[in-house]
Image (cartoon, rainbow, N blue to C red; front, side, top):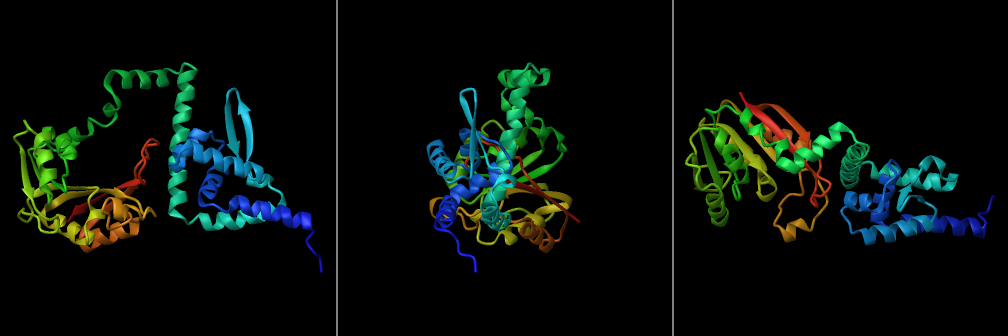
Length: 318
């Protein structure tokens, strides 16, 4: 029988100590694929830079991460292929578990967007015409120009129901382009804010009602939008079925909400009843409501956003 030497055992314990923190594991998942700066890592895992710096020091001390300087900036990377055999075995075990974790999947999506923006910045730095135009356009017209024209694609004859309209942000974007907006929310304070926002639009009707008991006739709207609402309701399936009831044949349902996540504190701080949703769950709602052509798409994450990732789902009434 071969005994492990004291020095080898000590080295193994050091390696294990480096992995003994969920945030450090999140960093290693990212650094196994990208070479990143502290600020980029902080944005990716939505943590303060000082906290990320502390974790990186521990990972460097325990041999997991390498650092190199590029001018005044430090970049960090872990190459799992270059780890010594014992460390490689530890990482293979950890990585196999992390692949199925929704938090790490969200981190990877966010960091991919950060790296993509870095490439745009690099092209701008070297005088790329495209990059310069992107910056110039944002300076002249703001960031909203990228999507402000999308509502113009709607049929101007449509009636749209904004279910859980909140302060009326979606309704304000759609009102200039359609015949009528039915803005519905259960909270009087939200409706009052929406009325102020939509002052001057005479094609918006406001209703105070629960989302599973809409004050609209059957087959009366061309599109129903449920944006960041379903995680607040007891039975999202009931709300989707009620939305399907008021849709005309061929009408469209649009759902925007959070992907499944593990931020359980949202239950207490913001009254969330559900911690996001999977594609399978969304498809089960639309199927039960007898809607077809369901499409679920992950939205591009905003690196500056602090919340979980979002998805958009669309479905059509027969």
